[in-house]
Amino acid sequence: MNEIVFGIYAVQSIIHSAPNRFKEVWILQGRKDHRLKTLIQLLEIHKITIHTKTRSRMDQKSEGGTHQGVIAFVRFRRTYQENDLSILLSKINNPFFLILDSITDPHNLGACIRSADAAGVHAVIIPKNRSAQLNSTVIKVASGSAENIPLIYVTNLVRVMRFLQQENIWIIGTADKTHHTLYQSNLTGPLSFVMGSEEKGMRHLTHEHCNEVVHIPMLGGVSSLNVSVATGICLYEAVRQRNLY
Image (cartoon, rainbow, N blue to C red; front, top):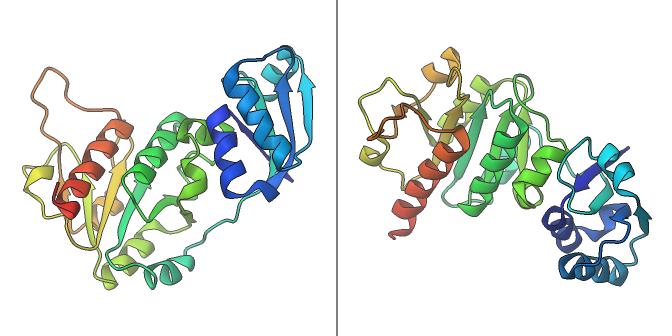
């Protein structure tokens, strides 16, 4: 089976990281702007099959997504499982993970993955149930980051959290109803942030298995932030502390 990827930046990222994954690429008929020409040149260098298609055909295939005139059909990426965590940890000096609990909106999931990649997170851990799947929308919003960072789908999130704690990784959850703020936490050591859904936050069992729970101070009229925005804020406070910026 093939995976569908659309959007110029997302397709470029796969060309640079794994050009052998391509089966074929559709290009919008009649489009001739510079960004697309550059992409076509890359595809030709790697001898990837190109077909031109009408806008209606491409809109249909992308199911209304913003394809930017390019749709790629690629072989499925390598998948990571729970047992890959041990191997991953053996190669990392100061682990930095992101756990996404119940993020069901593909746009939010893609944006969180993008922030995690930018912040140097070593892996994103996602429950197989109660989560958006890694579809073409997630890949497009992630802007290539889904190719750069291991995405580990797990069947039992609490079991994984316990395993991480046994490996001396401090797990910090985020919630509204806590007096401890993000900026009062020490984020310099082995660390995993847990971000919950916008509507309900972390699930009860997930909350119970955190070592610490913090909130981001809200100083204006809003009571909460979009989960992808909150993820970026938390991760970059860790980046600041861990790199002494």
